[in-house]
Image (cartoon, rainbow, N blue to C red; front, side, top):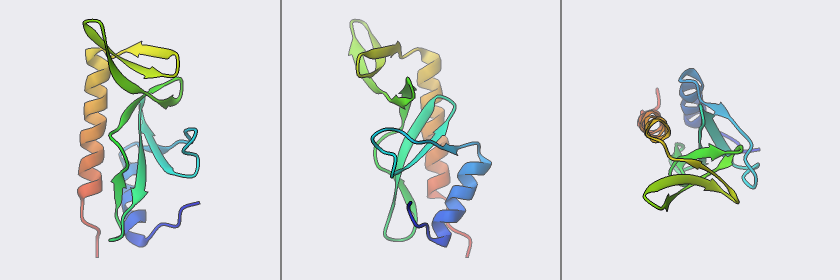
Length: 111
């Protein structure tokens, strides 16, 4: 389990208050993964005591981090052989997730 600093705990409390929840995602079970709706992200501790995104947030496909790919004239989210359409609604949900997460991660810690 990851040991969190007081600053990181404050950030986690803000994430919980905003509706984000921890999730275990193979093969990242030992990492700090957070989910809200059908979107998720892998977070990492940073030296100054904060948290950062290890990679851009992803849409979940069968409970796993999907990758957005071009397929024909559209886009899809893919995990292994499973894929779902990257509909305007799903893309909007992912962008809202990214924006809200970024805002929370950038908030300064209370001293």
